[in-house]
Length: 141
Image 1 (spheres, rainbow, N blue to C red):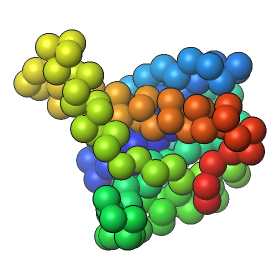
Image 2 (cartoon, rainbow, N blue to C red; image 1 turned 60 degrees about the vertical axis):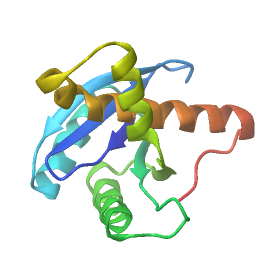
Image 3 (tube, rainbow, N blue to C red; image 1 turned 90 degrees about the vertical axis):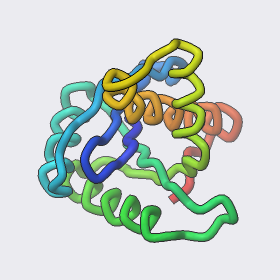
């Protein structure tokens, strides 16, 4: 399961058991990090996931800014609530890629705002799965 953590909306995506196909699940709207972690834990149980990947928005120069630290703190909280392995995954440019996909699909306005986080989570998961296929070891912590 991939999580594109946001202050208001958090995108969620999952993959099939073969780890070949990443699919969007939806967006969870929750401002409270503890409540969000509980909601994601319920989704993880519902989808029977074995691992969670949280987008890690490091700066383009590789430094860790406040947003990346916030995502790391959320990942730690999530690992305590779910007891599943939680990995961080470099998500640089995933939102840009998500907007590009939505441009190609001509998704605009309120509908775009509602799905961009879910599309970003799917892009995060696709990148992570590709890495796993190439390296057979998993992500970075």
